[in-house]
Image 1 (cartoon, rainbow, N blue to C red):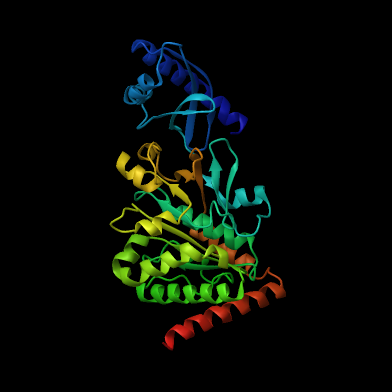
Image 2: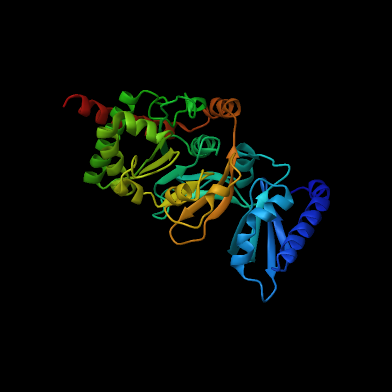
Length: 369
């Protein structure tokens, strides 16, 4: 945070810290605020409880603390700093994708920029890593799912030349990826029609099988799907088997899946399909049960997230990592795509043309059956 903003916020932080200590003392659970962090959308207080104060007692007072601080929700959890209280920033500020990309510099191959952690560090997702490989995004309407998919797609397009990486974008509502239309990294224009999405998925499966036979995994191909539940409900008999094969075997062939849905429940996504997404990015959900389903484990408190791009990265046994999604408008992303369209080298365009031909042959092979 710039010094001027930090100075302006200091009285607010001091007042809130005093309120926290007063509420805890009144409920015979004394503790002291020893520090904290101020992120773009979230403030964290580090709490040092008195020897006789139990963590369960502090957690039970979360609603009382939120009421005293006049915030809509407050999370209580443990971390390396001890007990941590998290609540929304009174003047949240956006994290700009384009500014963050300029700050980070060139990204490694098949790596996307997600946003900014609460500690102020850029958060990257390297799809070639087995711990990432495929990503499932979950959250209610207004949580920021589509903005996160657009940040992932935009960072991949703006940081990879054609021939190194290609994208296949599917969105039944036709809004999330429209700014990427015309980008040379796209295998085909963004797809909105379910029938075309089915054909595209089948072609991608055939491409994966052909690569398996040849032992190839490049160029990398990233399939991005928004509103996955809508697509599955319309075309379940074909979409679910194709996606399951891609998440089970795609990484070895250099094919990765990034999909978003409101609630990845068993009624929509099969257990096998869900189990093959090693990384989950979870935004605000409605209930603790929805949080457990979205994250694939309990205790994340995702129902207490602030929404509007406030997310958790949940993977393996590691502690979930809080981050703010990087934002880019359609207008800015479209302008960047137009600017970058003339930048890639001729060799990059040749490699991309080869991948386009191979993918087109996979499509044609499907049509002949």
